Image (cartoon, rainbow, N blue to C red; front, side):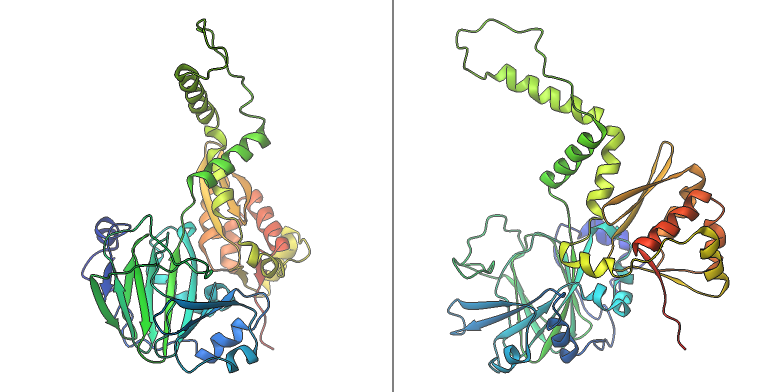
Length: 393
């Protein structure tokens, strides 16, 4: 499938640009009109459970910055100057699920890699300063005009301005520059320094992607090993040699411990997928309370059948992350940091339960072919991972 209107396939984009180099895409979304207004965004920023920031630049270009964290108030907005500030709201794709369609062209990238859709609004000269991000990002111009400047080589150890609470580069010498109009989009790999400045009243949609650190994966694996009682084999050294320095930890000891760690990883192979699935689907703490609001009573398979027979439709909870995997005995569904097992007969249902946005009576008939899958959906409805759509009266 073509990657936007670039003449490249999605796979060609991944091979040539993904995590390698920037790409400007003119009219990725042709004739784009923002589906959310600045007032809508300001309203979200005033909500207590929604993550937002207000960044103001003073002394214009002399490194005087101030950041305020939401929830914001009408008084906060009333005190703002006419220019040189930016409002940013995180996870707008979850708070406003009707914007999920914007993610459709990017669904060839694994869903667990996707972080959120952040929306920013700025009047003229609004900016968050030159900076780098540790993740991939697609920057869609939604309203107005923004000038983007970048340094096209990654910066892994950048010098930052001290004591301002923001990750702003102390020095920024760009070598590429573009002006983006509504519908234009810029892809940036991790660690590419960039600086966006609103040339007029402007909105930008940032599709951010994430990746776990080595420490995150090791921590998840250790926790899974502890749960399963693995990794209890003690260090051994049957080839020990006499030493003249009893307090020294020598190179042989270090090599033996490295070997022991490799052996532990091999022994943990059966729980590795379990650990990864739980890690990659953890719910952001800031979204946890909103996510569980959809929880309900546990219904039986027969009761779910009755609901579906009445024409009811289940909606996937956008605040939760979903993933699935095959294993030797069947498969696992991962939801919000928890793992659920199904037998071989239920593996075909995992993509339905993890990838579909809605489930109807026809889907339920397929799921019910495996009793474990049907019972699992009952449990997921009770936990709020799936919930019944509201009925228009």
